[in-house]
Length: 356
Image (cartoon, rainbow, N blue to C red; front, side, top):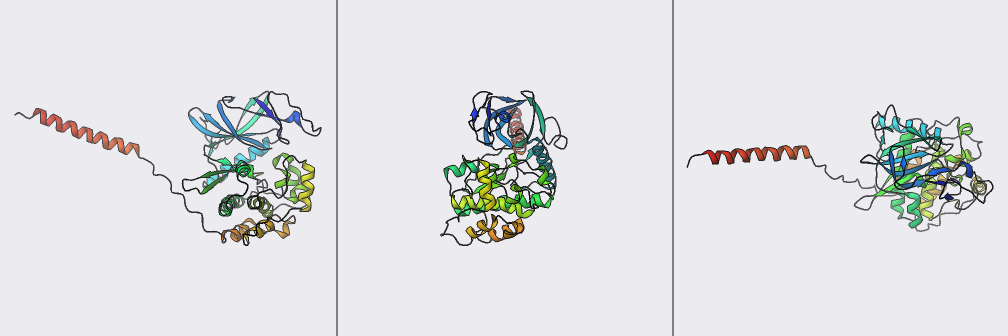
């Protein structure tokens, strides 16, 4: 087991973490598990996403492959609220761009345990479990290919936007959209199939100034009205996060550089709206939509996520539907084989018993 600082990503090979930044809350750093280590009854395979509020692992529970999401220190309430929101949305109907929530305890019902808890190093650790899905986190993909093909970029954003709309219909805002919570799987045809692994604050919004925690999101992807705690949050706040995803994939860089930068520096830039144009002179209208969506003033953005979706959707062809492989009905096959075997035995016995 190692320890990682959520702010500067310093990793200690033991449980003692020290950082040269005197403002770094190293003593509150969270544990990170390696391959073969155990989180209660769950065996860790590898971490696939590390962000300030949680760490997501590929793991095994018995013979079952799963995704395990563990809350970081200070973000326990966020995970509990998020798990309840995942359950509520699943009861409305499973959205294809949201992971399938499983019971936190295998012998329980999901309604009773949408999230679970265990004790690690004398701390209660809260977690939830998802059905396993192949893929890579968008943040990692952009390190390899900073500018994916623009149609792929738009398709990814449209799918995540549709999931956010689904959340809004349940009267909940996200407010924490960023690349490290989007899992992207490419199908056999090479088309992106994204999943939103995090539902943010899962809150209607009025009490955000009182309940917001800086560990919920990176300043580079947090809307100015949340950063300043001055203006009311709304659906336009989620437009900002979606616009940030689109901008980064078009420009090949975040709107506000944040790697190895202090939070206050990034926050000041975001509050002032000091971002450069995407530079995509090869594209028509799409860059303008991204830049409008990340306007520092909510009044300068699309007023809601539906408007953002509509403006973007008409500029690219529809994402082709994925052809799911047909499931083999083994039960029917065994019945047919058994029937044929029985008929064969009857025929063999009949031939054997007939006198010559």
